[in-house]
Image (tube, rainbow, N blue to C red; front, side, top):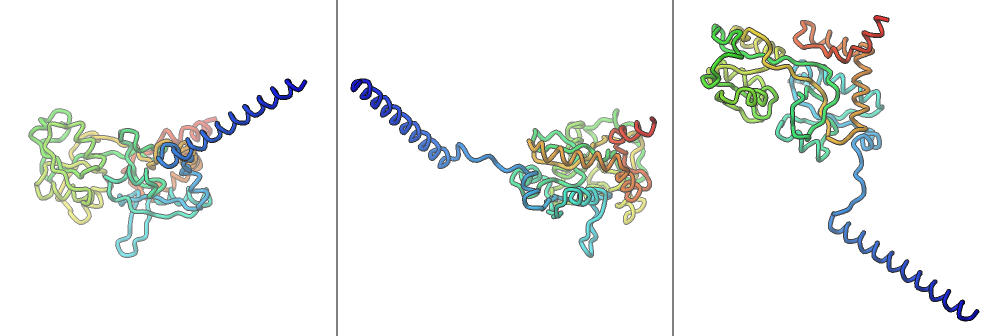
Amino acid sequence: MEWYMRASINKGFQFLLIALFGALIAFAAAHYSNSNGASRPAQESVYARVIRTGVLRCGYFSEAPFTIIDPNTGKKSGIAVEIAEKIADELGVKLEWVSAENFGELTEDLRNGRYDAICASTYNLPRGGRIDYTVPYAYVPVFAYTQAGRSEFDNKLDQIDWSQVTIGGRDGEGATTTAQKRTPQAKFVVLPQTASIPDMLEMVVTKKADMTFVTPAVYSDFAKTNPNALQKIAGRPFHVFNVSFGLKPDEAGFKNILDLQMRNMASDGYLDELFRKYDPTGLLFRPAALYRVADDAKAR
């Protein structure tokens, strides 16, 4: 009996030593990992941060009719602006605007949390997984524009010798990036990211480029102060972009809630109102896919 008790005590002591040793190893591993950055607490999601802080930080850049900025007051209006305001209202949070005019920093600014979403006319482009997109709320046609009186390009954009053409663009701008991929033989005069999109049209006016690619809305605004200087090259659009809000990748919860809001705005007619208000002449293409559910319901 005495031998059995001694053996039991020894086994219990050994178990205690093993447990203590294991705890020491776990503590040391955790301390080492934290001090070297190899293992850290899970990072707060964007959606969790928005709800916790009660603030939705929206990156913006100027492009009518999506984001219109009054030069005198700085007040913002437009399709994207009102969509962002509606989303913030539905979530019960405050909307805070942050400039995102530097296109070269969009992905980095999303990654480091400078803003929670790019609430503007974000063209869906392959960006190596560095930006995710909501469902589109509009489709934007991009046309080619050249000097008034030139007709040699009309209905021939798929036939011309691009090596003899100079294209004006802006670094990081969606239409410029697409043109560089689709017409690599062309010569490009690319403005820095600090330039404005209408500056691309100005290059064509001054004959530094044969043509450039912009949306009809951008050209329409430009033509108001530069009448009869340029003309649209006849034919189909050079490209049609899906237009969405841009998000940090791997934020499924945040994307889902924004997608839900976009779909609700489509199905309840809110987007209809915005298009009538800001695009009365139909320069934009409507996101018909978003209306399919509503149209099917009406047909029943």
